[in-house]
Length: 103
Image (cartoon, rainbow, N blue to C red; front, side, top):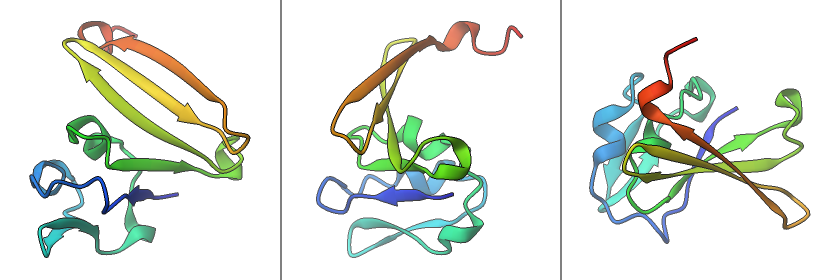
């Protein structure tokens, strides 16, 4: 499981590089690149930090995702987890980050 960086959307802000706990993302030619995709923990920190949704998480069959991709859009305290399925449909799950650790 790994992230996918869409270089056509990346603005080279470097936020993902700063937040990645495994130090796996670097800027190269003003675009983010993942150095070792197999080492990605799939923590989604970079997805939450990217202001232009240039990073998605591949949801493989082993996770029940069947090849879907996950993006996250921040809106104040809300996190909109958008799942783009292989059939072209989308599903959105919205979480309030203020309550994220209550369980």
